[in-house]
Amino acid sequence: MTNPSLLILAGDGIGPEVMAEVRKIIDWFGANRGLSFDVSEDLVGGAAYDAHGTPLTDATMEKAQEVDAVLLGAVGGPKYDVLDFAVKPERGLLRLRKEMDLYSNLRPAQCFDALADFSSLKKDIVAGLDIMIVRELTSGVYFGEPRGVFKEGNERVGVNTQRYTESEIARVARSAFELAKRRNNKLCSMEKANVMESGILWRDVVQEVHDAEYPDVELSHMYADAGAMQLVRAPKQFDVIVTDNLFGDLLSDAAAMLTGSLGMLPSASLGAPMANDRPKALYEPVHGSAPDIAGQGKANPCACILSFAMALRYSFDKGDEADRLEAAVNKVLADGVRTADLMQAENAVPATTSEMGDAVLAALDASL
Ligand code: IPM
Ligand code: MG
Image 1 (cartoon, helix red, strand yellow):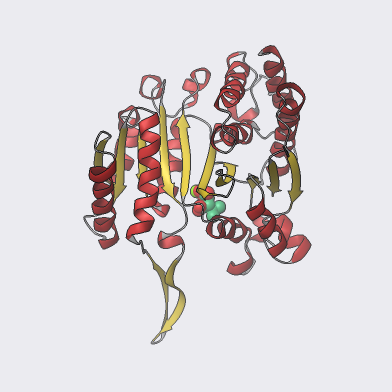
Image 2 (cartoon, rainbow, N blue to C red):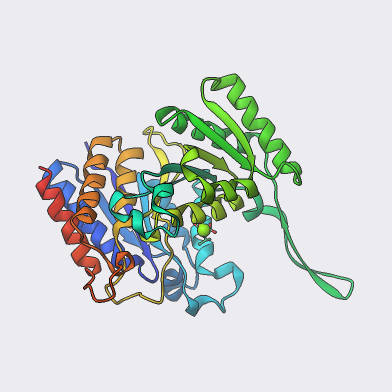
């Protein structure tokens, strides 16, 4: 048996720092759990642009298609703001999502007990929160044609197109229903069927998939603006939420902040099963490249570490090892080890990125 393969694309800003901690965790599983991976590394985003003039080379794209899972750090930074749209760092990430056809983006928003005080909401509203947003990731306004800035008479007009086919809606709905079945059996679908035809179709197709294949899952529909309001009013009413690419982008950021720190939240982007039955997959933290703190050892590696836990769960069928890693992160937080983003007292000394990673390793050792 050959080892499963991982491609690490650390990217820009804090990406390489947090990914260095994940490398330690990967090695730990190899040394202690008989779970070895063939790890390769490559460039994405601004780092790829600096080296090759493109945010993702064809060769890297090909590698990403071949491995069992991709782990991505973060892309982007102010240095690249002036670049042409077509070569901006974000385009590298969007190309990976599109060409790997990673249509189902799982974004858990989970409130860690030790961090409930960090939410901007009252503690009782968020304590124990555990919801999952399933965001469609390969279609909608992010990719719809026509798009562009055009001349119309004597002024310019900016155009993007929201477009969804039935099959695109049905497949992401199925993945959300499947998740709901494994959790609390409740799915809420969000769109704007009151103003958008694509929203009307979205609602219809989700309902049809429900009636034909998942009649036992409790399904509700909500307009996305009302959903945003309910997410901050009473987030614990939700279990799984399924929504389109753009609404999912917004709602998942809002949901993430309910938990107090973007630095804690992982994500999985999954596509169709490959020949070996594993889904095409890319795992990345929800946070961005945080250029303001890059290179200072301040970044919280937990979101990236927990993204690897999602890889163990969803790509490698190692739910028990994912539980072990998540429990280790929980223990570290409960013990009071905190990076700067998780500190309240001004005078307390925060853990550095690598101290946080080492604390997780120690908790893993203690779990044996
Ligand atoms: C995200 C990000 C990306 C998006 C950017 C970096 C292109 O905001 O993953 O949520 O808009 O999808
Ligand atoms: Mg976003």
